[in-house]
Length: 142
Image 1 (cartoon, rainbow, N blue to C red):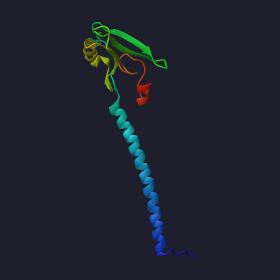
Image 2 (image 1 turned 180 degrees about the vertical axis):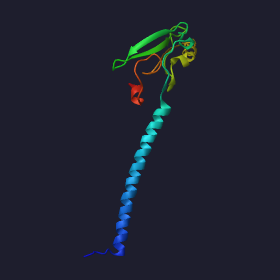
Image 3 (image 1 turned 180 degrees about the horizontal axis):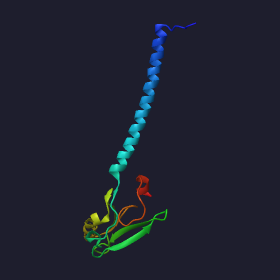
């Protein structure tokens, strides 16, 4: 015995099938977009430049190499520029951004120090002479 569906129930069945297919496609596309955006964010966000000896790594005059340890035991490297006047007006902690390392912004420390500020420049984990690797924003913050 063959059961024949009415025209109306056939249309209802096909529209339900389309809805399910469209929902699956939408979930797949949204997931693919999310993965692609995370990959793109990683590709454009972190550009660490590791230490390589040379003129850029010559410690500026009157500047002190400093090291400190993170909560998870990694050593971070920085330069401390004491104010050229005493007492210092304030202390500035300068973060160089997502590219390069402290050798690119040593001039900022020198200029601020001549204006009476103590300045600490340091490299994030994985940048310059600092230990570790940066994987994501949390790795930069911790």
